[in-house]
Length: 495
Image 1 (cartoon, rainbow, N blue to C red):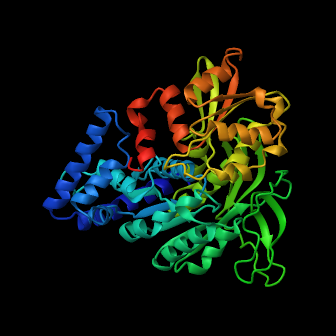
Image 2 (cartoon, rainbow, N blue to C red):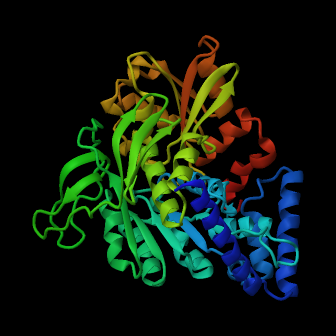
Image 3 (cartoon, rainbow, N blue to C red):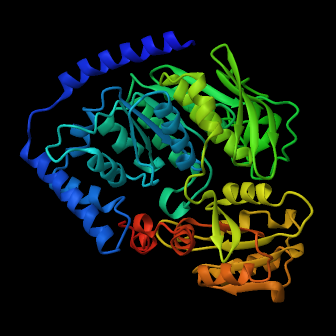
C-alpha cells in the first residue's frame, strides 16, 4: 500500500467515523454521569491513599451506581470492540494489538493494566469517559483483554466486532474448573453473537473446535514451520478429538498441545491457516518469524524471546489485520515492542538485571523454563509462588511442571512467596539438594539474596505467580504510583 492509498483510506475512515460518532453521541443521563464521577473519584482516592492501582475498584463502584454503564459507554466506540481471551498471553497480545492499531492511525482505548474482569473493563471505560458520559476520548476502537470466565457478561455489554481466542490450558482450577468448562463458556459466547468475526489459534485443538460455535466469519492462525526444532513438552491436555473422542495424532508439536494435529478416526484436523508464522528463529533474548497472510509476507523481528511470544505476536497480527490494520503497521509495532509489565520485563535488582516472567500454570512455567535455560552457563533463578485470590488457592499445579527435565542442581535457586516452603519441596524432588535452595518468603529479600554474589551487570530470572509478580515490581520497577499495593487488594479479590 503506497502513501496516497493509505492517506485516502484514513480520510475515508475519518469521515465514516465522524458520521457514526454524531449518531452515537447520547443525550445527557444523570445516573451515567454520577457513575462516572464516582468511578473517577474512586480511582483518584485509591492512588492517593496507596491502597490499589485503580484498575478494578473504580469500575466496581461505577457499576453499582449505574448497572448499565458499560453497555451505554460501549455504544459510543465508533468502530467497535476487539476482545482477547485465553489462558496465557492475553496481556502481551492485547498490548501488541492495541499498539498495532494505534500505529495504523486508529484511536484506541484498552485495559492495558491487564485487569480483565468485568469491573476492570468498566474501569478502563470510565477512565476514558468525560464526566457527562458522552465521549470516550474520541476512541475509534476498544481492545480489551477479557477473563475467560467473564466472556459472556462482557460480550453481552460490548457486543464485540472481533473476538480472538488464543489457547486453553488448566489454570486456577479452584476458580475455573477443568478446561472443558472454560471452552464451553467461550463457545456459548460465540453462539450468542452472530455478527462477530472470530480469530482462532488453529494449533490448539480446544480453540480450533470453537469454530463450530461461531456464527460469523472465522479466521485461523498458527505456526507452519517444519524445520522448527522446538522440543515438545509432555503437557498434552487436548489429547482427544472433540468430535469423536479418538486420541489425536500430531504431525508436529510445538509446545503443550499446540501443533499440526489430526484425528485418525473422523478426519478432523488443524484448519487451513489464514495467517501463519514461518521461518521461526529463537535466541535467548529475541525471536523472529515471517508473517504470511492476505497474499503478503513480512519479516517480524521481536525484541523478546520464546516461542510463546511468537504465538502472541502472531495472534495480535492476525486480529489487527482482521480489524483493518496494514502490514506495515504490524511489522513496525512488533519490531518496536516493549514487554508488558511482568512479561519478560527487565528490572534492576541492586545493580543486576532480573528478567521477570509470569508463570501461573504448568504450561506457562514450562515455557518460561525453556526460554530461560538456554545455553550451558549456570543461571540464578527465583521461583516465587503465592496462593492469593488472583493466583488461585490451589498450588498443586507445581507438581505438573516437569522440573526434572532440567538439571536445576547446576543453577543457583531460590524459593520465595507465601508458599516458599512448598516450592522448595517441589525443587527438592526435582533433584536440587535441599541445602542448596534459598528459602525466603519475602520476595524482595529473596531476590536481593539471590543476586548478592553475582557480578554487577549479571542476569537473574524470577518466575512468579501473579501477585508475587506485582510484589516484585512494587519493590524494583520504580513505578509504584500505578501498581502500589495492588497485590494487597488482589488477596481480597477486590482490586
